[in-house]
Amino acid sequence: MSPLAKVADAVSSAGWSLPAARSQRVLDLHIKLSTMRLPSTAHGPDRFEWKQRTNVFAGVFSSASTWKLLRQPSPEVPWHALAWFPEGVPRYGFIQWLAFRGRLPTLDRLYRWGAVATSSCLLCSLEEESHSHLFFHCSYSRQVWYSFARSIWNMPPLDLHATMDWMRRPGNVQSHNRRLITLILLQCSIYLLWSERNARIFRGESSTVVSLCGKLNAMVRNCILSLLGSSRRIDSTLLSDWYYLTLYPR
Image 1: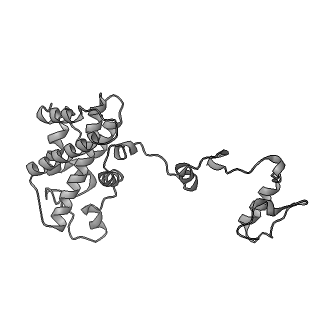
Image 2: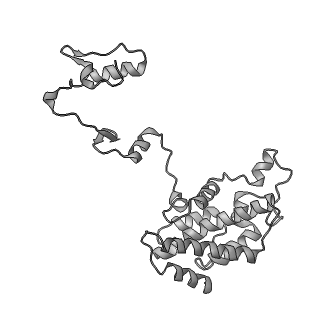
Image 3: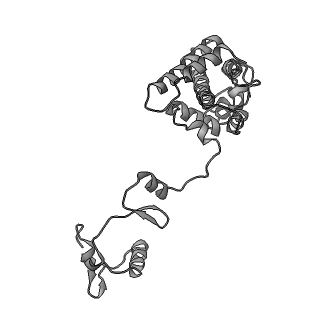
């Protein structure tokens, strides 16, 4: 049958006129077609229908629906909205996602694989570098995180998973601006601390706590400024709220 053949070409007065099935998939198609009414111009004009979900079809193609139908979805994790939120930076969010999943190549993992000779933390040199240590048990990263987190929490969580649990709990962040600032701060903190750790490994460069705090402040501020200039509906007081939090911490 020609690649340009129409459905009508596969129908005769006796029924479906199909080539012999040479695979199980084609055989399944034959079986399915045998249960369907034969196409005919008497039944109306042909039309395209795209599957949206199980037993639901529509005349409009949706790439999102098609993607969901083609892939095997994994169970939804409770913290996904903390890493993948509309106002976040994808590059920062990717590192945050790896940190949440414990999949960053921290030295404790590399040491177990035999890839490095020591697993001592590159930021404080006091303990083994691991995800829990780096975010935020390390004396260096704790000072950077605490310098800004204390503006939002009376007693800032010094553990990544405790921070995630706190942020997911309804009512802990009262205003939309405060929640958005908290999301941006956590994302930028994780990205910047990981970048500082990598700079010490690959470039032999290091920043003091004061210097890194300045970089974090600028990074959060730039993220907020980029949102104010975008098409998203962002409260114009977001930047002033950030200034207030940093000038008058709790």
